[in-house]
Every structure is written in C-alpha cells, then in structure tokens.
Image 1 (cartoon, helix red, strand yellow):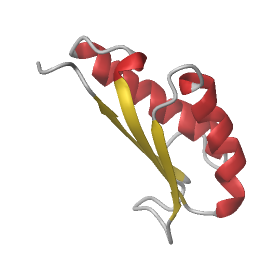
Image 2: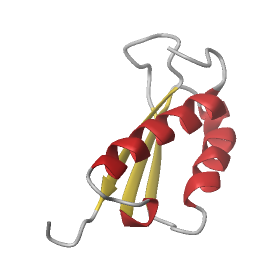
Image 3: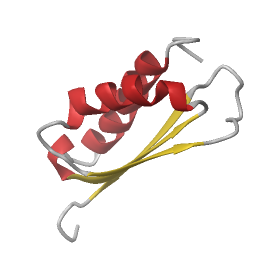
Image 4: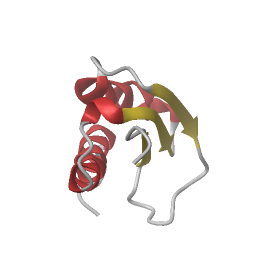
Length: 89
C-alpha cells in the first residue's frame, strides 16, 4: 500500500494503474464511460472527487462514489473501478 493516510494520492495512484492497464489494450482515458470509487469515510469524498476530476474532468464518465465500511487492507482508503468502451473490439 502506498500513500498511507492520503486518499487523494491513493486515488491518483489507482487511476494511473487503471489507465496504464487500459493503455495496454489501446484505450485512451476518453474511452472510459463509467467509474466507481469506494471510500472508507465520507470525509474523503471531496479530495477523491478532485483527484478523479484531475484525470476525467474533460471526459466526464458516469461516476459513482460509495462509502463502504472498510476495504481488505486497513490502510487502503479508496478503491477505484473503471469501465471503458472500445467500440466493439
């Protein structure tokens, strides 16, 4: 776990990892149509939202943020999921 105690940095890291995975199949950030963010405390919502906006502000995918009781690693403050549409590939 990196960026212990920093939800914004964890979000940025998770988004980088996810976008790198999409890039391996030829997808750009503009292909992302939906994101889901799971946070362990509603107090993180604004900073997670800002980190998300920094990446997807121009793309504007459908986005959901959910407060959860916890994640597998107690140091993990946020989990991110992306869905992308690659045009029938």
